[in-house]
Amino acid sequence: AQGVRPQVLDATAGLGKDAFVLASLGCQMTLIERQPLIAALLEDGLARARSDAEVGPIVGRMRLLTGNAIQRMRDWEGEAPQVIYLDPMFPHRDKSALVKKEMRVFRPLVGDDLDAPALLEAALVLASHRVVVKRPRKAPIIDGPKPSHSLEGKSSRYDIYPKKALKA
Ligand SMILES: C[S@@+](CC[C@H](N)C(=O)[O-])C[C@H]1O[C@@H](n2cnc3c(N)ncnc32)[C@H](O)[C@@H]1O
Image 1 (cartoon, rainbow, N blue to C red):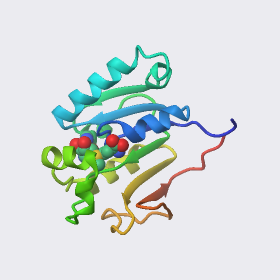
Image 2 (tube, rainbow, N blue to C red):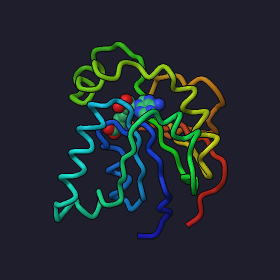
Image 3 (cartoon, rainbow, N blue to C red):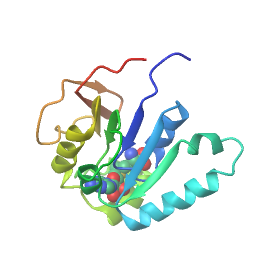
């Protein structure tokens, strides 16, 4: 299919679900995860998926870095990612968040990512083309610069911070 397949940095990898979707669309993905247990689970999953006939080629487009993405983005060497994708934990307390299995894994380990404004700031400095932030649909934007527009889904919203047009 036609289209843009940018180099994407997913700076809040979690268990790699969103990054896997982007990799399956053909994007080259770099993932960063700072929570050691989650990073270890993700590392293990990626390693085992690499030898799978069906998903091997997809995870072959995913490389994982560990540590704090804020620092890693500030220290970035080499070509800047075209797109940076952020999905930090949002501090909300409603019960609906508990029914999602992943959230039951993340919440006790990760807590709330209260440093999201610094993460967004570092991403906006590094990305060559755009930063995309995933939020719960009704949640406020991350403190800081305003997105130019948002795409709303059923339960999520994607806030777009453009720097430069993406061309095929
Ligand atoms: C809501 S989860 C992301 C879920 C992910 N989008 C997925 O599809 O599986 C947020 C994750 O980002 C990580 N995270 C948040 N801030 C980070 C930072 N500054 N550096 C690295 N990882 C971070 C958290 O540890 C947590 O695992």
